[in-house]
Image 1 (cartoon, rainbow, N blue to C red):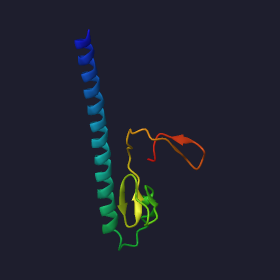
Image 2: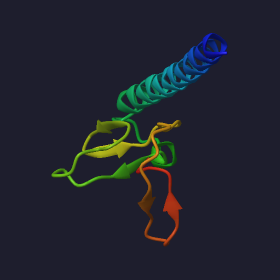
Image 3: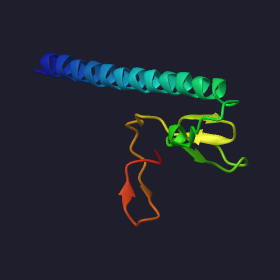
Image 4: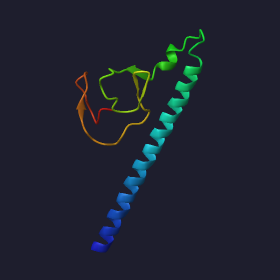
Length: 102
């Protein structure tokens, strides 16, 4: 029975690891798409077109702080579309508990 248990545990580990790696791949794809979007905003920066709505996924972040998730762009923290599965609970300003900072 220990051999079958070991096999099942290895299979579970492989499934969890592959799911995690897939989620990281999706998150990186989303960040790459955000980069492409930001590049297009840079190209339009000199135009008179209002692009303020296009920056809805970017939030101000103090320069002295570390941007915990996502990437920095012109002093702002870009929130990723997908977050890590690491459980490290935090309390939000609305008194709700979230699974992590993201």
